Image (cartoon, rainbow, N blue to C red):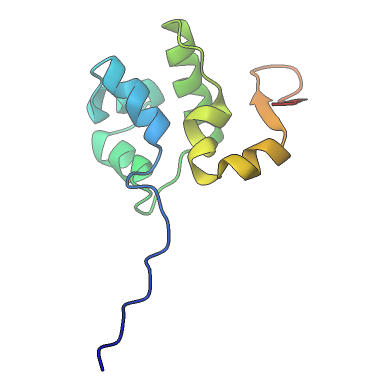
Length: 110
């Protein structure tokens, strides 16, 4: 009797797919993005691949500001968190927006 393999857990093929898509739209490399957040290419690579490093709040704000300055209609939620949730979860949760200066947290409905 042959045992069937258990199904693999559903995970995205790549971490931060939305961030990667916006990077691709502008043909930005890991080196380019490392400069945006003021770090080295290996450190940015580790952060985007979730290999021992994580994006800090300042990293997220710098990347968000960078793409907003290019005219992209993005949010921190879209770039860094949306890929972790299903559509069902998104509908039940508020979106959090981060702003420099003043109150860092503002909430809005999706």
